[in-house]
Length: 282
Ligand code: AMP
Image 1 (cartoon, rainbow, N blue to C red):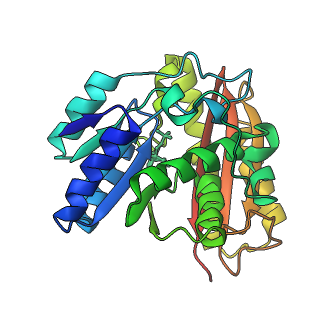
Image 2 (spheres, helix red, strand yellow):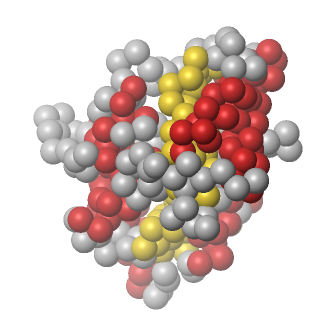
């Protein structure tokens, strides 16, 4: 497994793979890898004959009061996990490699970037779209793998790929959960034992909505009310949103008949967690 720090190194490695007629799969991550990330790597291994994983804590997607400085950085452990998965190339650049002094070009996927997480994290999705566009240009993969866990990110990136004609296929993989239902996240390691218990309520609220839908409720408002009623079990968490939206546009939908994304974000202690469930068309 090659570990590349510079754009020149990763480009040379990818050129060699291309010379060997390999199909390239890209898995962008911020590191602190867990089974959720590894599920993307395994999907990439299954679809593609060569896999490139990027590990880059992207400064531009963090707000000034967010956790950029304390975000977990575990490069050695991450590389050991990726070696076991037989990944071909890990790209772990410094910030200055990706954002050279004076870099000012950004990618803004207008409109959709201001919904869901974009409301309370202004500028977040410009940072995400910009870094992912850079990684696409650097690696030029055939397929790129993302987790449904970050459903709004998926919607923004799908739109970016479509609108800017990136010549690749985006593949979205299901949410990997802990045995008790909590969605795996690098940020879960911030949680105290009490907070970890409180975090369960996000998944519980989503499950309640699924149960209501299974019982025949289709209008969004009573479903949202049912979700909030469950979230109220944990008065210490601060709900950012609990929304029912079109998974492609992230706009609110009045009912779930045509399929919908039920998405929640909440601060548990100082840690912001997100989770969601996709409702298939009825
Ligand atoms: P991150 O390192 O948090 O930027 O995540 C890198 C990729 O892993 C993103 O595409 C995430 O959606 C995906 N991911 C993170 N957690 C999970 C999870 N629990 N299940 C599936 N994919 C995940």
